[in-house]
Length: 251
Image (cartoon, rainbow, N blue to C red; front, side):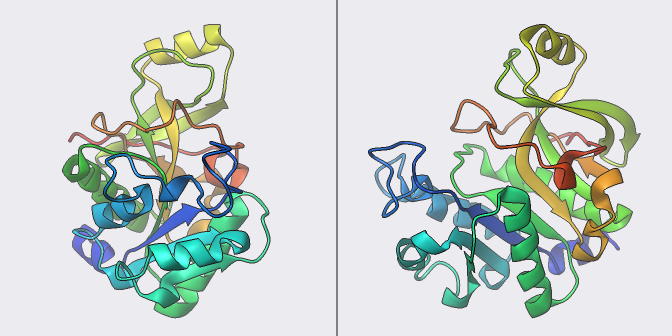
C-alpha cells in the first residue's frame, strides 16, 4: 500500500488511561494528567489532538479513557473530535489490552487501515517534524504489514527508559533487533554508545496483522521529539515490543 493511500485510511488512537494518580494530589480521578495544561491555555490532550489534525481528519481520531474518567474526558473532547470517538475502557487491564480494545472498535467502525497509537499526555515542541516521522511509520506499517514503533535518540544513559537495539535498514528506518526494558546503568551506557533508541508508547500497525506482529515490528526515530516526562515507565508489553524492529526518520 502506497504511503499516500495508507495515510488516507489511517486512524489515531490516543491512549488516556490510568487512574489519575501520577501527580497526586494535583492529579486525581476528576483531573488526570492528560487534562493538565503546560501553557495555561490548552490541555495536553487538546494539544495531542491538534498535533495530529494536519495528518489525520478529526473523524478518524479517537481517545480511549478509563470508565472512571469518562465524564471529564467527554467534556474535554467537546468540539475537538466527534463525541462518539471517545472509547471507554470497560476494565483496566494494562496498556497492551487497552490498545487492542481500542483498535478492535476502530476497525469495526472504519474497516482496515493503519492505526497509530499515541500517548495523551506528552509535550512535543516540534509538531511538524513529529508528523513527518509518524507519516513514515504509517507508511512502513502498511507496506510491511508490521508493527512500527517510534524511538527517540537518547542524550544520556538512563535506567528509567526501555532501549531498542537498531538492526538492518528497512525503507526510511531500521529493524529492531532487541528491546531491553530499564537496563542497569552499565548496559544503558553501552546501548547509548552503540546508537540504541529509547522506546516510546507510540506505534503504528494494521489491525489484521497485529496478532502475528509479535515477531515482526519496525520503528521510526525522530531527534526532534522529547517527552514531557523523564522517561517511559510503563510495563513492557510483549505484544508491542518482543522481537520488534525499528526505523529512524531522516527528518
